[in-house]
Image (cartoon, rainbow over all chains, first blue to last red; front, side, top):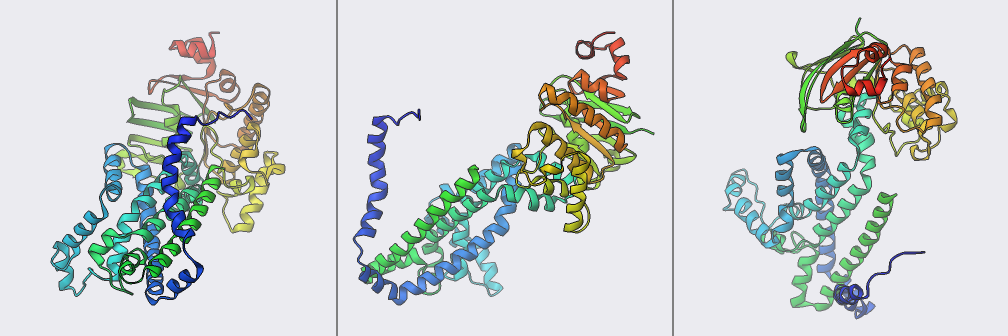
Length: 261
Length: 236
């Protein structure tokens, strides 16, 4: 072995940040007693929130895969100035604070919003509904999925696609049989990142969908709600989210390993 | 009857293309310095969606004709395209690579692919992944894959470039025999005079996106139109 060792100053300064990254979560996990967790999980608010979060995030993920995958492919094959503008549009929700997105959603789809009034005449009211939760999750998580999948598609040699077409595959057939399997680890990574982001979505949801138990109160909103009433429920929900995050981290490492093969 | 007829105008990056030639030879070689537009020409013929004007046909079939707003999609062109680097599908084994373009149900496609692999003496490679093949083996597999789809004509981009000297000669002879035996017209990009002389009856010279000379290798060697041609084929 002849690998260069990390410089000591980097370990000292970087280590300080690393402690800050891990310490609060470790404290949360280590100071919780199993009895407290069990009590928190049994709380009706917890179970309702878990069910709602799973339902909404999985639906968000499904819509994202169906519509985000074609968008990622479009971006990957776009050229020049059009590509730069498309990229910027997709990245907008990453740089905008969720509270701004929530307000923007209210201004457009709220009861008095520009499009909200139109929907209202059709008998559709989006704000403070489960659909509003999904819309908020879609917007904040889409960039993570689309950009990761785009990088995966860009890494697929265009000649492979042209050869597949010349061998008789249609445009969609070549995508399904060549591009998609070759970009699968990037797509799974993007889906995992997007799911994590959707699951953690708080700000835009609070503004646009509110915090109604069973309808719009997802896990992060339930933590916020429980803090005032029952801290043990808040901790239990937080631990559930920690557990999911840990599983996602392991999955992401696995996808990265298969992608690097 | 012409095997390849090309009239192509367009712009790729900084390169202005204006390529016109017609060949009735079974094997036509396209030669030229790097960046002359050789690979672009093959990609456009194979069906890459690049903004190009003009028209082209191969083995009697029209590929595109911008005056008639006709653009045949690549899957309907029936051309066996071997790009540089061969582009074997890395996630499929050799047999599945060759079966990709075969017709019929799964069973028929696999048996056709196996037969095609035998015809290029590569049946023992069927279970291997492309990453496990040597340059010469990958070459045979890519040829088998192209031929398995029953193409009207072949487009070969530097088919011998990846081979070392020892394999190059035997593979060249193999390729020459295979092309004659298949009786399919081929357009071959090469920068090696030995490949050109051994394989092609008609040579098209591309420089800076334009055809500067065409004819048999001997004709070109007798009266080279540029330093490149003289350098490549030598004067007789």
